[in-house]
Length: 310
Image 1 (tube, rainbow, N blue to C red):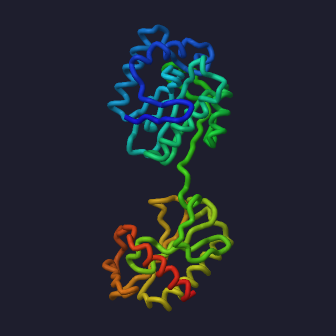
Image 2 (image 1 turned 90 degrees about the vertical axis):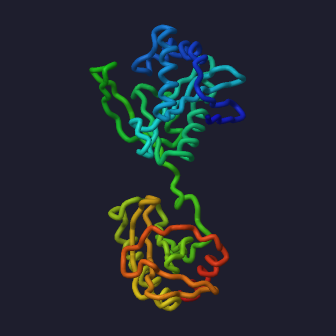
């Protein structure tokens, strides 16, 4: 089971022995003000812990106890959104023992949990709190959660409804944070990168410099430049490899940062740097053959060779 260690605290899996300090947290007035329901007796608290442990086993939820010098300091929880492990989305909860409040512990512990969740399993993580819970609202903003909506939530514990705020944090976009050394040319609004999976050889990515996810979010200026770039790259590839056809695609299945694929297509074999490349799907839709090429030197040679043809 996962244990997260920092210099200030440890996040370790929930135990039944946490029931007593958990019950203490739930009897605190501030906690009760911000929760819809809470255990009223130690026996109820112990049963809640048992149900949480069962949920961890059956539904993949992760309940972590925040521990400081072997002492219980609170809990942070990471669950599948709507308990659906296929959603790619998670949600978080937290509570801090009164003894450990006022130290920034909630922000640090929740931050560690969110980073762990985005790194290991989720594309996005949701957090929700009562609209009156200024402390948690402040924490969410510090951790770069974005407000989704304010809405009224009704359930069996509060049929009249409670105003709550829903927040979300997205997994950092790879294209926004990392610029590959396979970049061939940078334009005003776009940059061009040689694919690290060169089948067919000369496959290029045309990537927008800013982060948007849908075609209809592109500006007229960006679209005009894109058209010029595609024309320029086609001429370059014709000089380099004389392809028989081209495909232009915009998918976004593997990464939502908008980018286009310019794919040269070949009837026959193409030789480059002593190796032979083929296009087994010529005349048909491309199969998903993405497989990063292990020969990085060849990819860099390909980048430089294509640049000479620009």
